[in-house]
Image (cartoon, rainbow, N blue to C red; front, side, top):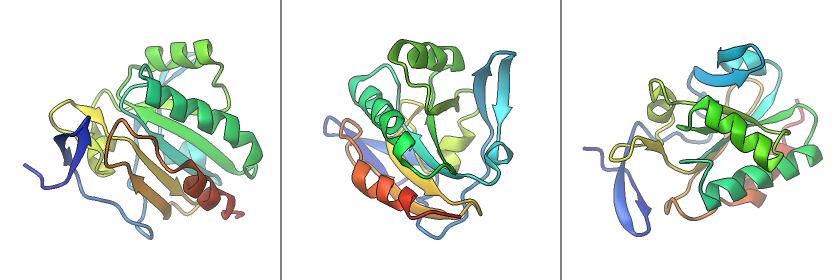
Length: 173
């Protein structure tokens, strides 16, 4: 077992993967996303020339995850044009698409790590006991350098939106 943990309502849960830090290169991603043509894989190539806020949540169909996704959806229009928000969870791509349709969150993209959990492990957010992702925020610049990291210690708490958004606003490349 790994020594890194988060809690869920006070119960410790183990995280798989290493803890990323500001200055690290963002690991490769291969996530699945629903598109009009069906399911497709997305990678960093799909964000070429963009700064990205990776908003990581356990499940969109929970109150805190919903708040986090809606908040970033509302805030993205005030960010520089070259900043995208990608919400990542273990939810199936179809469930993510349904959520976005029901909640009107069309300013953010969603992608799923349900197939392999490779994203969760590479970003140090895979909760071993639940095979869900822990709540976290990563701001990644156009060169794939991590400029902001927040691993939220208690999964049911919200992240520090203001600090993450400030980090994204600083990226003007």
